[in-house]
Length: 432
Ligand code: ARG
Image (cartoon, rainbow, N blue to C red; front, side):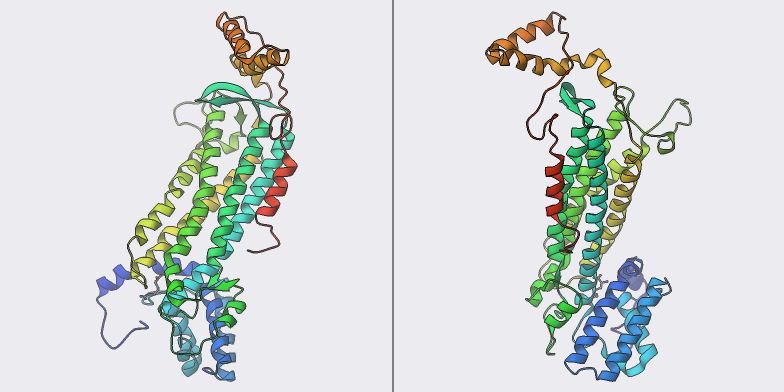
């Protein structure tokens, strides 16, 4: 059951410890291993290591295995060490001699790496699309609530008038920055490492350009040592993209928690999206957003975790690298869940349209009142002082109107410009 079996018996504890939960994680990647094995087998056929009959048989069996994986009937059970062992075992069991040839000119080191990269490319596209859905929703909410005023804060002190239009589209535009990082991570993952074998190439005349095209990679990692050094780096760059998305999401979740508090009362959600208290009957708690905040805060540590895991590893493969999967794969699922629940709940967000009836927000207008004096010809510092003494004496009664007409401000949210920027960041039609 071990690909490296030479007749001895591995220690049971050593075996359990080194495999850990790796089989479970490989279950997520096994379809991509099959995809890469397919390209590899075709390539071995092309360079004459497999004869046409063997190539056909292997491809047919790999297609069957892919089918079984889709039907969730291709378990990687003990005592298989990993997905690679299971696939080779099945090919050999079903095909005999031909199956034993599939591992020519490759190693599990380039096999796991290519599977990971194919997987990450798909996941990164998935994140782009999920973010796009949330972006569209935020932009629609911005449009709908364009002129509804919302207090702006600095230092958590009432500052200047803002709007729900600005708030929603601020997060939308910020997600574009995250998409840039996701796209950069995609580019790093879009370089075929297959053919680097254990990390030093092989003596077979492998056609790496062929497998690159076959698997839809944009290019290859030409240097085999660099290809292997991609392990860890590919995971880290993806993690940076995920952490960037998480940073935006956790901040939005924090705003929402704050805005849902009775002391603010700016936003609310239907009862079905809030949780209650076992003791306080009035409670409508934002648990959902608190957990988005918490998960996304943890996710922001992921690049650091991966950096610590891989820090000071010399070039070449090390088993330490197996643990990148244990960090990255659950993080991907967490971020997906956070994006999905945030998007679903924002569809039913309710906005308080009468915030400014409360006189505690009168001061929001001090700057606009001051600016009006300046427009009438008073020097700024003089107008500032006049306004300060008006406020101090308690006689400030502002006209609650704002005229911020410059680009990106209250009067002109630049929604169209923001849409175009997102369009250009990573257009859906182009995978990379
Ligand atoms: N499970 C390993 C990983 O994820 C497989 C790669 C190669 N294993 C090895 N012992 N060389 O890194």
